[in-house]
Image (cartoon, rainbow, N blue to C red; front, side, top):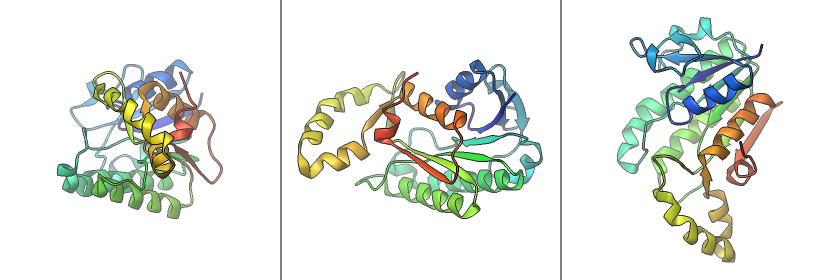
Amino acid sequence: MKSVFIAGSTGYLGTRLAKSLLDRGYEVRALARAGSESKAPSGCSVLVGDALKPETYRESINADTFVHLIGVAHPSPAKAELFRTIDLPAAIASIDAAKYADVRHFVYLSVAHPAPVMKAYIETRVKAEEHLLSSGMNATIVRPWYVFGPGHRWAYALIPFYKICELIPASREGALRCGLVTLNQMIAALTHAVETPATGIRYFNVPDIKRFQT
C-alpha cells in the first residue's frame, strides 16, 4: 500500500484529496494540531504535530509522497502579514521535514504568477518554491489562481470576462496563466501528481490543471 502524508488535510482541498486517495487504496497520513484530530477526514491515520515546527512530526511521516496544502483561508491583500508568518514558515517546515524523512516526492500547492494583484501572497509562494528547489527533492509544483466550486461560486461571474481576454492577443497569455479552475480539476490534478511522481521538478500551471477531470 502506497502512503501519502498531507499537511492541510482538513481544508477545502485537503479533505477532498484525502478521500480521492483513500478511494484509490492509499494510506493517507494526516497532520493535525493537538485537539483537532477529529477534523481529519475519516479513514486517515492522524499524526499530531505543529505545522510550523517540523521536529514535532518529521519522525512520523513515513510516506512516499508529502503533499503541502496549508495556507491562510480566503486569501486577500489584507492578510499579507499572515502569509509571511504562517504560509511561508509552514511550507519551509514541511519541506525540511520531508527532506529529513527521505520522502521520495513532494507536492506543493503554490499559485499562478506573475500576476497584477496579491503581491505578498505570490511572494511567499515563490520563496517556498525556491526553498523546495534547493532541497533537491523530486517535486510537483501546482500553480492555480482561483479554484471555484461549492462555497466559492462567485467567480462564475468572471467567466465571460476571461473569455474576452483570451481572445485579445495582448491579454491572452495572462488570462490563460491566471485562469479559473474547478474544484474537480484541482483534485484530479493533485491526485495525478501523487499517482505519477515526478523525477526532478514538474509544474502544473493553470492550462495543465484544466486538462484533468475526476
